Image (cartoon, rainbow, N blue to C red; front, side):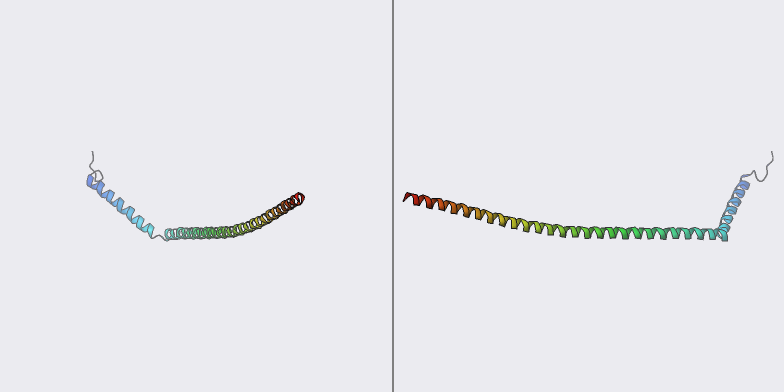
Length: 128
């Protein structure tokens, strides 16, 4: 068997260290590569545009939500005002109806009393 330098532990350790160093140098060289930097800049632009679009969409949705809430609030306020007006109208109508019922009842009672008085007077006149 041959004992070459590659077979020894220190040779393998040296080769591994050189390979690691070569990979590190290639990585550093690739980091400064103009094509790679341009690609990275394009990806950053796309990401920034996507983020701006998402922010605009979020702002639009938030504005729509606020508009909807404001509209619902105005509708609720309008409904409450209309309900209070209807309630006031119903109360006024009930009061008017109650006054009419009271007046009719008083008129009927007055008629009954007049009829009763007439009958009593007629009875008194017959006895005499």
